[in-house]
Image (cartoon, rainbow, N blue to C red; front, side, top):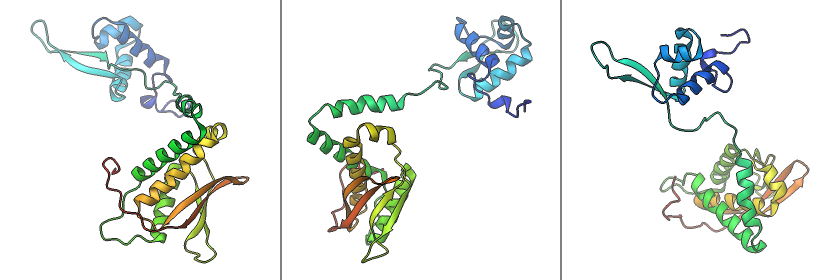
Length: 243
């Protein structure tokens, strides 16, 4: 451990200037380098370079291999950077989502909402396991599995007990939106996507209920997914819907 409590073996090149320098030296070299050659280029002790090379190999950024000797003697161990970009860089997935949504948003509003809902349904069918053979689908089991899915996705669901059947919720409070920034900008697409996701999951579960609508910000801190009874849907056997 270092003085600040970090483990130097788990420090990334971005966090360690020395490790970054070792990696840059390997990338700049026209041929693979050994420990001594790398140390000479950096002006540091070979043991220091060996420590960082071992860490880079463990992180998958550098490859170690034995070079066939030109004459008598043991093969020389050399190092070369693994092809690929630095995985420690920043990501822009929110920007990517905005770019893709902008294409939808520029289309006919009704058509865009329909496509968003159907996309949600397809993913809802994909993201849940179907009930096992011969298991009778009940509202209680279906809701429990739906709540597990929504929790795993980050919605922080909370069922609201029904007036007639307390064990079967009439609605589900969604206390967190994993796509909040996108929902604030494109609620007309994200909300139908969420509704379709719930509908698709319930359909895949052969649930005797479905989601009828999603009420954005029904409360200051949550949205409501409204449920109602529905006839059992036939098991979806299309290709590509199984996990």
